[in-house]
Image 1 (cartoon, rainbow, N blue to C red):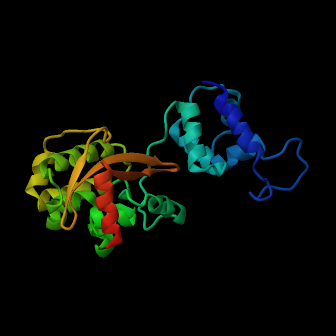
Image 2 (spheres, one colour):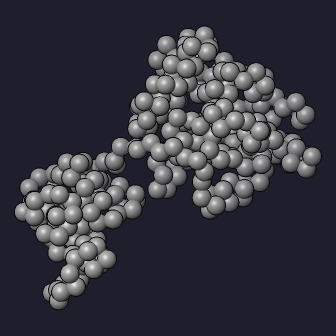
Length: 270
């Protein structure tokens, strides 16, 4: 095992305040917690933790890294970093039900004035959107929270389905992409419940899901939307990870050309 993990842990340990964490304010030779104090907080042996800082003893388990991350009060980004240093991979995604997002993320969405944009979670619930998304893709604010799911809308909402120029193509792409992401979503129970619900509600979903196809990112695809006022609008979807929130994805539908952007701007002025 590389000693990069040990060096990083020593640095984080030196930044912790012993008094704030309930340890006595005795004179210390070095700043921060002692190794045995971190080990006690993480419920691992002091010897094993010492070896970890010294780059000895082999690779740690994911459970040990999680306990150390909690003991050291690491952020999600810092936790991911020690996984990459210690195991050569990122931690598995942990699903979190999101009731809302930070004002900062909403401002990111709103800054994309003429590009419909949204945030979706691991089970493809739309948790936030900008005004362009509402006027072009669907008025999410008028929907019940449970209905703001991309798969439910595509298969079970006639108005949303009517906007899809190439519904069969779009439906296959969405299901295949969702299947690929569901494996790493960290939300197996929620995914299973959604799939069961849609299988019972939509024979078309059941047929496409049974094909077991998987797809990666959006790539170079173009999506066409049939808007009841503006007519056909060409969109180029792209998906981006949200820093510190691996269970969220930012999806931006950039207008395909000037004419499409003008149509979006015209809808925003109505």
